[in-house]
Amino acid sequence: MSNLSPEADRQPPPTHVAIIMDGNGRWAKARGLPRVAGHQRGVDALRGVVEAGQEMEIDFLTLYAFSSENWKRPPTEVDDLMGLLRLYLRREMRELHRNGVRIRFIGEWQELAPDIVKLIEDAERTTAENKGLTLIIAVNYGSHREIVEASRRIAAAVAQGAMNLADIDEANFARHLHTDGIPDPDLVIRTSGEQRLSNFLLWQAGYAELVFMDVLWPDFTKKSLEQAVEEFHRRERRYGASTS
Ligand code: IPE
Ligand code: IPE
Ligand code: MG
Image (cartoon, rainbow, N blue to C red):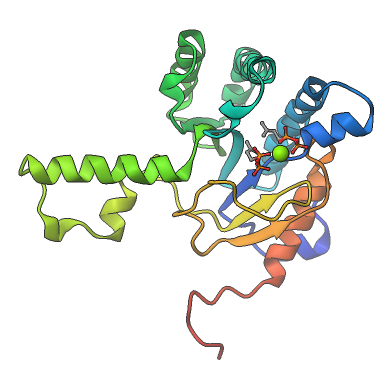
């Protein structure tokens, strides 16, 4: 039986929900705690939203965990964030696998510490055939670089004669992005009241519905996700066409 509110229950959930998990620092500051405490509680919220995504039968859930610009933060905070990623992968993988979750990473994660790279490779390999929710974690991710790298690979293929200039089209270009094989997000949620994309899924979110919520990420619950989905259902997606 579904626990969804009647409104959210009437319509199928969006296929792909992407979330910019923002506000950990402000959550901690408001309580006089160090930023790391906010990030720790942020991981709890993340665990909850993955569970909620499964219950709501969302097929693809993308979570922005660390941007390519987040390296600008003090080294201790970066270490804390990497430490939490490491812990999450070590502690949660078995349970996620048991629940049929398929895990994928986007971003330049190969540049992270070797032990994290190995944990990521293991997680992707172990869960590759799972048929439940696809959980996509964006780490060291930035759309500008993703798009530049895709252009570079396409240019190399053309230079080597493996591809013709005329073959470059939108579908082909998208296959060179990190999200190859993943449908574009229908709904992008950002918490903490900020209203920007911060270099997240710029190509892929071209026609996503954007929902900005004031809740700080550590306070985000299944109810918050349901509210965002309800808002999504109130929107009319036109893709440039006129209304009937
Ligand atoms: C989001 O919370 C977590 C990451 C960006 C890794 P922030 O750390 O950005 O929290 P605020 O925006 O400072 O409140
Ligand atoms: C975006 O949040 C990145 C993540 C949530 C991982 P930031 O807090 O880094 O974004 P800005 O700096 O406010 O744009
Ligand atoms: Mg922030």
